[in-house]
Amino acid sequence: MATAVPSSPSAGLTDTDYNRAALALGDGIEPALVRAFAEVESAGKGGFGPAGLPIIAFEGHWFRRYTHAKFDLTHPMLSYPYLEKAGSQWRVNNENQATAWETLKTAMALDHDAALRSCSWGMFQVMGFNFENCGYSTVDDFVTAMKGGEIGQLQAFIGYCKQSPTCIKAMQAKDFAAMARSYNGEDYGDYDKQIARAYKKHGGT
Image 1: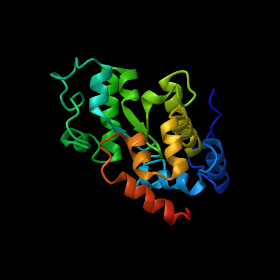
Image 2: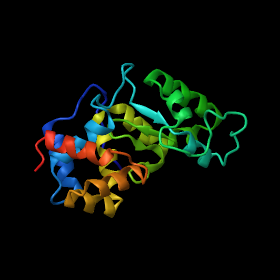
Image 3: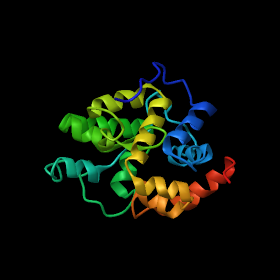
């Protein structure tokens, strides 16, 4: 099971947390790299939005997959095929955090589990469908941890990365393109360059 998280989401990450995360990920992985992922994934805003809820992004193509496309006709803004990264529906659904949470609530009314699985969560934007890899028995347990504090979000990141030997090897080799591909898929845009810049900014060598 995953480690317990703080009761207050206001408890931010410390240098010790980043150091421990780097050690947990493996030899040759620096805290600066963990900080780089945190900065890029959260756009430098941390793990929580203005309402005190985790930063999320609803991904309608994943909702479509988990609901077997049965809402394509009735809810085309929530359930649609993947055509491009951050396409038109995605931009509307995730215009801001208030909108993203309203989108999630609407999707949850249709299929609770599928909706939670179809969001990326927190500072590191780990997808809900990775809940088991992150050490949780259910997606609801995962979401509770994401709401509990940034330390839970960091633990989810560690769990997600450790289940992917390709991702760990890329981190150890400082192969930013391979990191980007492993973490965000083939359609990663300039994610590799963003991570590299943030890594250097945080003292990476």
